[in-house]
Image (cartoon, rainbow, N blue to C red; front, side, top):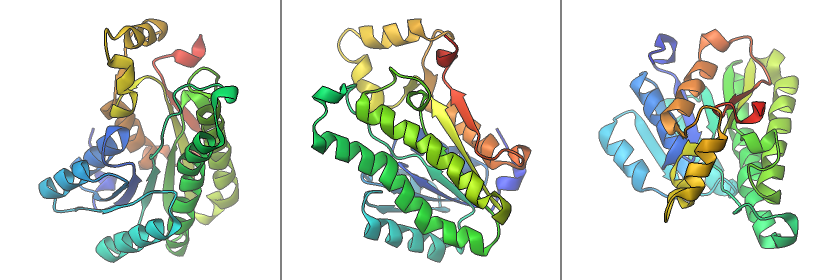
Length: 250
């Protein structure tokens, strides 16, 4: 998918080392954008930088305020601006119900999925407001819309992301900021690798339960992100787009 207006734009993407974040980085690079990646791991980031002169990165956790500030400053120093923020980093909770969720797991999921998004957004948003324009795309999940897509902590965190996205749009739309969210379902990523291990019965069950009858590739999610970042989505504010093969229509 080619979107001419994305050429020369600067994209800051969290979770860019692998999975959906990496796929997003790649499709924006293919569209001529400058991309700055941020992730707690770096092997995939190194590979992207070696292959693309307009890709830079920093290593750190989205839950670490100082690391986030350094990365955002580095992105602005490298490219002069940030036009598009992709809040993609996130972790699972092993589908643990509340009584099986200790405080450490709860805090880890909330710190990464919710607080991390808040910290990154608050670091990037002032730069967007100075230029009176910016696009924020938050990665939620079908677990932010229905039960069963994760455990207690993950589901709560993804519901929080959807609420946060809507409030961002409400507060900043008239200041040139577009904030929307995507809600992926069964996507083939390293984060879901456990479903494919052994005899793969869990992965087979998920595909069977999905109306589309299959898992999606990370690139399919990345392409929807391209659309949301494009001028074609210019009147979309606070929307939540499911990318779930029909899971939530059941």
